[in-house]
Image 1 (cartoon, rainbow, N blue to C red):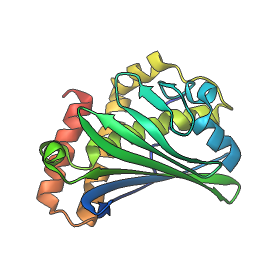
Image 2: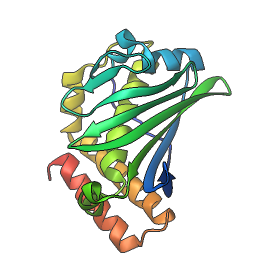
Image 3: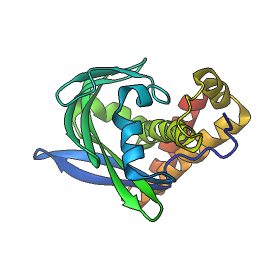
Image 4: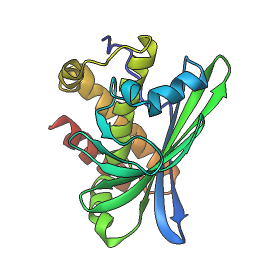
Length: 210
């Protein structure tokens, strides 16, 4: 796999929202892919395709449960082919929500992902430490894997090579740039520059181990 042109989300956004009448935060990223909407949808929802770039298993149908390797589990709440998917994201005792939309665009398709988390006591300490980059950087790395899968014509992404790249100078540079970009999105969403930049630096340090 060629990681030299690794690309995460192209557009990043943070905003305060409500979820079921409760204060929440939304981290949003989107990216254009050079494939049609149906192929992109299949890469996101077909278990055999999904496993080629994202380490998840389970009952991948409406109402089913899934488990991401060494990460979150959840339930599939919405699956409207070929355009909208919503799941719970359960990790560390907290529940948040991830939704994706696929929209045809020019000669390809755009994927937009929104990760919504409550502004509650259970998540506040983590948020005050890392801000939107905690989830944003993770999703950028997932988008890298999806992009490699799509651009290769559907090949399996080498997980060993992926981890090696993340630990390389190039991978760490990507992570730092991603964290910084999410910090800028945080500022655009209303956070003070000093606070947002400090969160972004802590996020980069967490992901890079530095």
